[in-house]
View (cartoon, rainbow, N blue to C red):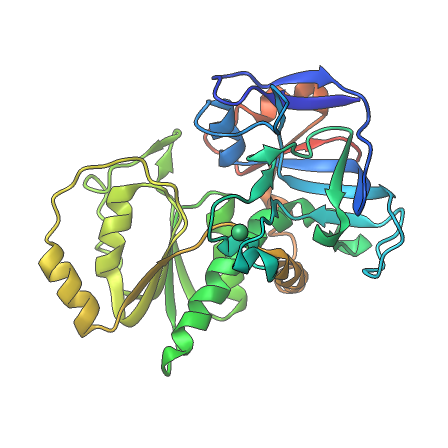
Length: 340
Ligand SMILES: [Zn+2]
C-alpha cells in the first residue's frame, strides 16, 4: 500500500513509500483511510522540528487528522462494526494515573504516544490500525465534515476546560477573543458563537509570517472575558494577558518559540491578583472531547450551514500530497483524499 511518510528530524523528507498492509493485533481495528487533514504540526514535523518514529522504524507515517472506514474489527462492546465511519483519536496512554483514567491528554509523565507524531505511525496511508477503544463512530450525514473532528476536539477541550475552571464563581462571559485565524482559531470561533458569545478573531499570520504585535497592537480591541491564544507568537501571548476583564480567563494553545522580552511582571501579577484572573494551558484532547466535538459539529451544521465546508480550501489525491504540504498563504485546511 501507499503511505505518506517522513524521516523525523530531517527537513523536507516527506515522501510516498510502499509498505505491506498493516496487520491489526489484539484490540486493534484495521482501518481503510478516507481522508487526512494536514495541519501545522505535520508541516513542522516535515521541517524536522519534532516527530518520533516508532521504535525499530527509521520512518514515521504522517497524519493524525483522520477519517476512516472500519475494514476489520474484533468483536467488541463499543458496537463498532465493519463498514462504520470512524475518527481515531491521536494520543495513546501510558500507565500514569491520568492516562489510566481516560485522561491521556493530561498525562503526567510525557511517556504517551501519538499517531503520526510521537512513537506511533500516523494514518496517512491506504490502510492503518488503531486500538478500537480510541475510535469515535461518525454518523453518515457528518462524514464529509468529520476530518475536522481532531482539530475540533482541541478547540472543544480549551473551551470546556475554560468554563469548567470558571465554575469557581458566578461567571457570565459576553466577549471572547480568539488570537489566530488558522483552522483551530476558526473552529474555536465557530464553537464560541454556538455558545452565544460575541467573538473577535484576530488573524495574525500574513504570508506565513507572524505579524509583530508591536506593529499591529492588539490592545485597541477592548477587553474580554475569555481569550484563547492560538498564534504561537510569544509577544502576542504576553500582550493578551492585559486584555482580560476582571474574573477573566486566558487559555494558551500555541507552541511558543524562545523569545526574550522585558515585561513589567510586578504590574502584571498585581493585575492578575486584583482581577481574580486565570491563565492556563491546554494541549491535545481525550476521546470525551472528540465525542463533544462531534455533537457540536452537528449543532454548527444546523445553525451555520456551509461554514465548516468552507474551511476545506484544498483537497488533493495522495499522489499530489506535496500540494497539501505546501499551503498558500490564504489556505485554511488542506485534505489528502484517499477515497471520495
Ligand atoms: Zn500518562
